[in-house]
Length: 209
Image 1 (tube, helix red, strand yellow):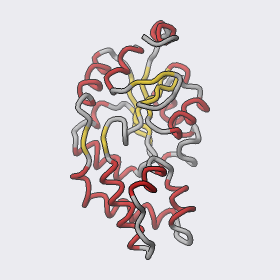
Image 2 (cartoon, helix red, strand yellow):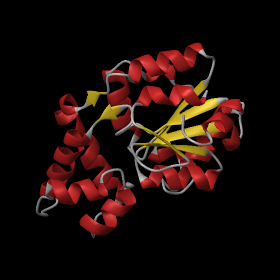
Image 3 (cartoon, one colour):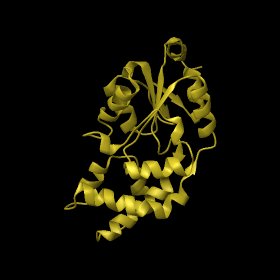
């Protein structure tokens, strides 16, 4: 047990907020293909895997500024939505995702999904793996004014769950997740990255409950 874990365990955690991509599912290959497909459709050259790795998980707003100049948010989002269905087969659910969700629900915890992905793609993935029913709240980029690293997604999810951010822990795999969680007032658990605490497998989140 890492230093401070006992403090979190004694705290009355009422909810767990999960990022989706990179935490519950491995969607890297799918998104890499979708991103490059969209770049090509708008007349831009493809990104290398090294370049894409640096931006994976960033909000579409950043994609727009860096790679799709002159295009609107709607145009880029619609392109992602249109292309994702072609590559959803590349998405893999992590081995312990379902087991972890079931265990947390059995413990009567509220669960929320907070993602920078569009609603259409989020639902496509959740339905594909039959895990949508485990979430009491699902908040996507369309539900807020600003995506992560802004705290909007976190705050919106907590409101829907009818609890304070301080009563929840946020599990994410990018700096955007950790920043959003801290800005909102959550305890942050980094999935293979630095947060208030760190885990290397999704099921390790249960040790904080």
